Amino acid sequence: MAGRQTLTGSQVINAAEPRNTRLSRLARSISKNLIWYLFLTPAVVLLLAFMAMPLVESLQLSFFDWNGLLPPKYIGLENFIELLDDRFFWSALSHTLIFAGVATLGTVLIGFLLAVIISRGTWGSSVYRVVFYLPVMLPMTVTGALWARIYESNYGLLNTLLRTIGLGDLASPWLGSVDLSLWAIIAVSIWQFSGFPMIVLLAAIENISQEIHEAATLDGVNEWQRLRFLIVPLIRPVLFSISMLQLIFSLKVFDLVWIMTKGGPGESSTVLGTYLYKEAFELHEYGYASAVAVVMFVVIFIVTYAYQRMIKIESSDY
Amino acid sequence: MIQTQQPPLWRSILGRIPKILIFGVLIFWFLVELYPIVFMFVTSLKSDKEILNAPFAFPAAIQYSNYVQVWIGDRANQPYISFFANSVVVTLGTLILLLFVASLAGYALARGSFPGSKAVQQGFLLTLAVPVHVLLIPMYFFMGRLGLRNNLIGMMIVYATLGLPFTIILMRAYFLSFPRELEEQAMIDGCSRLGTFVRIVLPVSRGALASVAIVNITWVWSELFFALVLLNKQEVRTLPLAISAYKPAAMAAEAVVGQQFAIMSLTTLPLIIFYFLFQRHIRKGMTAGALR
Image (cartoon, rainbow over all chains, first blue to last red; front, side, top):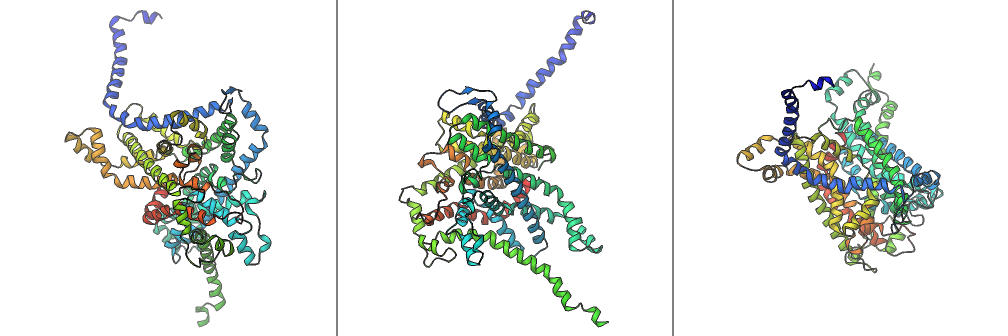
């Protein structure tokens, strides 16, 4: 305190000056860069209004009891406590995790095998490339409706085929069975999306320089060793990336389940997406459904954000 | 001596087995992937009786009636031509809005180092991790308050916003490698920043804009989740809603299977044509997005 009292007038001004100039430099820099702020405005406004605000509102709603008509009633954490006791919620959560886990494993594994085979320059490999990616382009609503017809138990393609080749015992009501419905949908997801990891992994394998391959050939490695000790280690980062992308994508599953079973029969194929939709837009439990949304947000956001951190998305200028 | 030079016959057959096996697996998977799609198009050209009795057969006579009925509206008088038109309008509108807003923002992030630019960049990255499903309930009420529910323009705004985080980052990456000399020349000639951007930068970036459009077109055309709650009225519904309107009930009970396949084919066909026109770009775009 004593020190401050001894400051002379000029010292005070000197101390204040840099702050003033810093402020004015900031002001000048902002006005000079005004055009850039204008360039950013439309994007920032859209993202604030249609993403950030609904996100906050969703969090708020999860603390309320609301049927959409009467004024919302604040109930604290009650929605979340109720969730803990709700076995339909737990089955939706576990179905989502099973779906995402198995679909990811299936698509990446099949995609990897196809990529390895095709990269060896098999006859007609460019045709495989085009055709294996084709289902990825289909709208999921179409895939779902198409496979619902293929799975249909009386006249559907799959059971007709099984009966024709003498495996009639295996014919089942695929989507009408509590035990099979979720797995039948997972199979469709793998059918549709295995082309995606294939294309990405194929690009990674083809990026491996020919010199490395030649060196390996001189060392006399066989095909298995080439795969195990050369290709897999070199494409491991891409393998990881594509698995995470596929996992994040599959955690958001909705369309396929909605079109094929609407989550049924019973609750046997309900996932978080369909559970949220039904609670909100069929039962009008908007607060409770928002609590489901918050759980969904936490699960997916953590996985996605961890992934972005891991691949250091901010530092790479792709 | 001569015998050792030539491998014994059993060994050369054994050596070929993996290759034959691999080839067999490839052909099998080829059929598994392709047949359902072929089946869809073939079935859309059959009569309902043929569909039920001979699911594997090609149509005895090609039936265009499914398409005709679908195009003008079936017995329930649902005008499918309008679903199609709505999808086209929403997709084109979304792409134009999305590309314009995202390239403005991406350009600003790539060029300007201004107070707050790092924070804005971090903010955009954060929005990339938001699972959009979470936004559904508040969006439903918000769009209602704005009077944009059951409104194609409202749908375009929502879709454009959902596509923004990823598209901005792609556009920023592109503009980082955009030659500054072009812009500087234009600015010396007296062009403003915005003028330079609209008259010089955007036209030169046609290729990049096209590939970003390609990345977005598929999901916008196929989007169901938000359309399901934001578009209830018959006249604004898009194609995915037309497909979801069909319940996966037992086949024998209904007589609209052919029509359902016709709608599915009509929904898919634009994307397949688009795929065959731009397949290299599409696969390269998806790969670049994933590889980073």
